[in-house]
Length: 346
Image: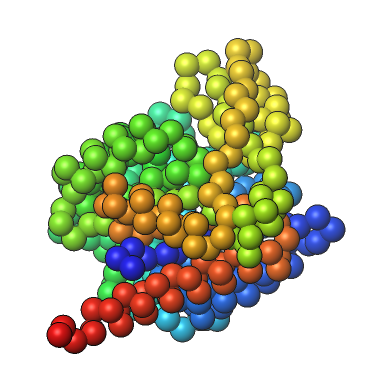
């Protein structure tokens, strides 16, 4: 197959289990993904959550690198608004030096938590000196690649250690504006389709990126996907799931995973004017063959190079089975196509 498959894992905490168990399952899933032929394995950043255990991608990435051999490991993503671009650059330069050729730096714009966790993360940033996301990403780009450093204050500053092979850079977004920013700074672009399933926005974002990106940069699509041995089994696994968009004043909406989180977000923000939109979570589900059929259609229509698949179910064995089925079908199809291309012409 011309496209690659990758995984995004959020370390979900299953009912009646503990966060440390969720993290152990993430390690198991990474090993399984490596054996099944996945290309990348990314972990997310969520703060103050009793549902997701992954609060520090950098730490988890280091542990996963130590427990795998060939799989690329990365963040999906670092919530850059909270952090110094220089420190993020140092973290990923160090990881890339420890595991050359295996580290991905994915960056996102969302807060990854509710207002109180954002306050705790940003309490030492003075509002008057706080940088916007675009400027932070420009700084991060410069620290990772000194030749692209546009800030005269930091032209001689190096984010050490210098790795033999730098981390690959990915901007996660769900809008044409994010796509344009990624292309302008030479970052690969990941459209977050599991957050924004609007096909028109997807098309506009991908077209925007591909019109101005460099030839070496790649277009990725992140989707929620669950495979089972039958479509009926897959349907039973996904059931009804929703995203909740929180609108506060004239600000852009933020997406959370439950009505309770949405209400708590508004409470913590002290918002007088707000609304919550409940939207069905678009989960691609069915047999592995059906899922790859849909991925193939996306690949053909939008020239998607890689798919980042998120498995939004808590039950560990079902998650593992889904990953195995999708990986097995992908590998079998690649082998079939390879054998076909090697068949002598009569």
